Amino acid sequence: MTRLLARPELGSVVGMVAIFVFFFAIADPFRQATSMGTVLYVSSTIGIMAVPVALLMIGGEFDLSAGVNVTASALTASMLSYQLSLNVWVGVVASLLFALGVGFLNGFLVTTTGIPSFLVTLGTFLMLQGANIAVTKQVSGQVATDNISDMDGFDTAKAIFASSFDVGSVTIRATVLWWLLFVAVGTWVLLRTRPGNWIFAVGGNVDSARAVGVPVRQTKIALFMGVGFCAWFMGMHRLFAFSTVQSGEGVGNEFIYIIAAVIGGCLLTGGYGSAIGAAFGALIFGMTNQGIVYAGWDADWFKFFLGVMLLFATVLNMWVRRLAVRR
Amino acid sequence: MPLIEMTGVGKRYGTIVALHDVSLRVNAGQITCVLGDNGAGKSTLIKIMSGLHQHDEGELLVDGEPARFGSPRAALDRGIATVYQDLAVVALMPVWRNFFLGSELTRGFGPLRRLDIDAMRRTTRDELARMGIHLGDVEQPIGQLSGGERQCVAIARAIHFGARVLILDEPTAALGVKQSGVVLKYVAAARDAGLGVVFITHNPHHAYLVGDHFVLLNRGRMRLDRRRDEISLDDLTREMAGGDELTALTHELQRT
View 1 (cartoon, rainbow over the protein chains, first blue to last red):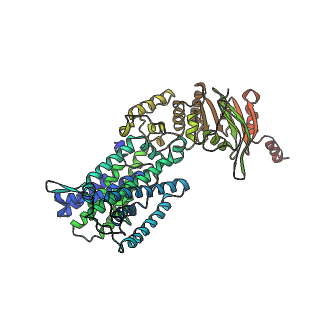
View 2 (view 1 turned 135 degrees about the vertical axis):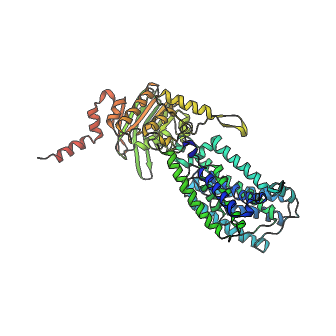
View 3 (view 1 turned 135 degrees about the horizontal axis):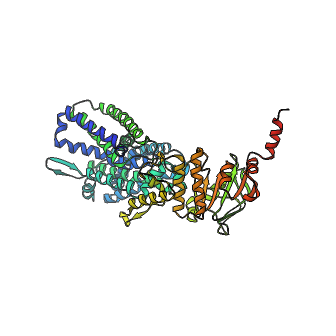
């Protein structure tokens, strides 16, 4: 029983069931199977990012540039391919290098200078936010990129990043499957591999980790690059789902990823949490987001609900942990 | 040949001299005690031996060869393990994950290379039992163990991973009398297992219980260097408390 209570995911499971029951009871469209497809899709767009963000938090760091890095990757791929009339896959690969580079830079600066990641990534967040819009205006003369849907390689890229299929009457988007895969990989890495052990250690007590020979620097840089990788993946999804990218998008999403991870049981101070919990956190977001629409409420209530969920989950997590750690 | 030999070792941080002209030997099967007040240079000395900092004067010989460790990993690879007073373990992680941290066992290859959790749990339980610690559950967070037990886990870990030199940074400082006794027994057990032990402490009573050799540091310099048969506990305590300075102080404070 204590073992079960000590699971980091517990709070998020309780919250998820509560939210589900709540909207199931009050919103008629929420009960239909087809709406589950939409809920899962919305959840997956947050969930794919919540996995590396949760791992990074367990490793004791934050990444405020995660949201705008998604947009920056999409812009890089889109504009590079369009302006040079290249196969879109060239842009896809180039933007992967770009997003990993942003992650590396964040990790490198944090581990080299010792400045808190909150500040370092606030810096890269502002830089990317500004550059996203400024460069897009410079290159395409407007705040969105040109439509790339008729370019070479678009269809194959769309099949990978933004396709969908039907199961009975329910439409499932590919991102939902990718999300499941990323959660599985994140959980595997965290609980079943050496780097996973190191992630818990560098977040839990960086000095002990260093003293027993854990490669602290490499672990942290890899975590930041993991966020970069998933930001690239989500950027590619947005690009190939909509064919065009709004350069101002993504601002504020970094907090949604962090909140999903926290609801999922990640400690703000690091050293504790889970990838599965972050997935439940993302699902809570997806359900709330759509539930409010289905209930016919003003969409502005969404933020209010988020706040309630965040407080509820953190208090519950704290209480559960205290119960479990008591001798 | 001593496992570690330091001759005239010094270290500066900018213009501050943290350590100057310190010499000591660590022999297999012996306990070398390093005593000193706060700020005497004890921690600088450990950091040089354990690879966290590098010395800028003198020589550090390991097995008779000059050595300079770039990282704790490099020192570990030469069999020099350090157990720190407060940062020996990661409190939120299970006992077995702490035991194997940095030296995890794996099985499988390539992307399927994974932690051998069963083997690690079993080994942790057996190794701790060998040192007389019986934990019902190696899955519990190590933060739930008592301070003495945590030190013992860290010592058992160092021995298991083939340490030849064990550096203990104030292992008894934060502990009560009974817990200190438990830890001192494991320090002696490590010595009997043939390890060279460096025991850092500011408690001369604990030092004299187990020590073979005593080195006293004061403001970064060596004040005293004696074998056990060359000094009594009373003298050691007096030197530790300030020696002649203390005599002068006693004189000064004496009521007439």
